[in-house]
Length: 223
Length: 280
Image 1 (cartoon, rainbow over the protein chains, first blue to last red):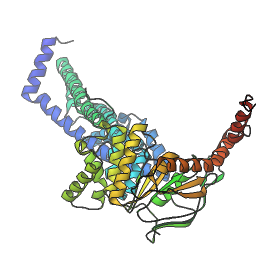
Image 2 (cartoon, helix red, strand yellow):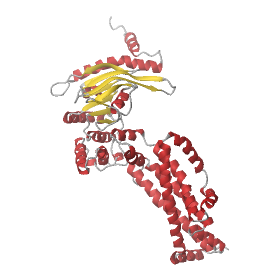
Image 3 (spheres, helix red, strand yellow):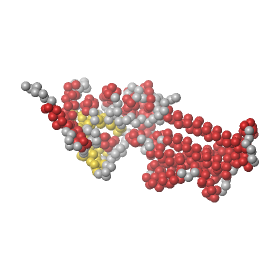
Image 4 (cartoon, rainbow over the protein chains, first blue to last red):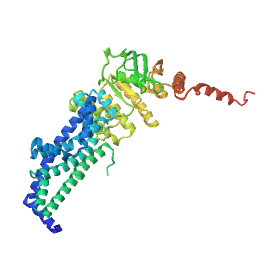
């Protein structure tokens, strides 16, 4: 039942060349990028309101912390009832998996902006949107990046689970297809791809982003 | 009078929900182009007064006017230099200095030229494109002064700007600040707990009493025509301010340590017992 290494590599290579795996990668990446982007935007906006208004913090802030502890796949049954077993349901759980984490991180990022920076900006006459854009947002960038990193990990997991159950193309569905055909070499190939993409995004994209910011700010010395 | 502070009252509510009076009936007039320092023991409300003038905080009663206009919110004509430089770490030195000019909607080229000019004045032309973390403490504070000066403020408010720096750097910056003041004719409102600093720099020293903060005495520092004050005069003025402050320091210590401590008697006692019959 367990395939040989050469068989796996053969399937992996053929899948990439023939487009079976490549297409699935494209489909999955497209989904996660969309869901992730929505989650970032929603998370930042919610974070802003929680930071800005005490009432929102006491109400929504508490709910968000509770929601954050729900694994995103748990939302799937609900999503199927609301939207049907389709692409939209998958997108929904990908987004919701990242949104709460993003909200929590954005809130604490905004809250931890040093009083001194805020005073300086006010002295020079900054207020309203300008204040938000030039002080609050950039000052919370380090925290937001670490939020992005965790949010990405959550939505990547949610995406795989969603595709596995919901179909509609993508790496998760390919995995499910391999299982139903008893094609273990395909299953392992897809697992390898999933691991590679996860690692690349975490180590290349987010680590580099984090390091650049830290070096620029002087938190970390240039290596 | 240029800056008028009229009967300011300000209290805070502390952790134990008690009302604590920080400023009690402050009246002060500052002439245009003058250099006024405020000295006082820690916690006497001198920084609070500066925040009120800056518009970062509101008084309970009384009013502050600059050139006749009532101060109600922060504005670029009253810029603050804080104890810590407070430069934005995500901007370069130049971008930090331009920050306020952008808010004034000054054209980009003009703003840049102006910022470069001011950076030259504080001797930082070489570090225009550096990030704040690459600078030393003194350099950071110079950028922060440049960022304030570039706004061409009516009043430069300085809140213990040199107290976090080492002695040598502070001496250099004292000289530079005086040069800048003579060159730009800006009115400087300077908060410090360092009596020497106050006497060295300013024309007028306002001595604050504490708990609640009020003005105890205003001492003008005599200056010679060439702008240099002889050491003996400086020393004398320093001694005078110290003796005024003694009582205040004692009050603070008594409150903090208890009644067993007395700054003055402690001093006298040692004098008596230390006299080993040398008068015989």
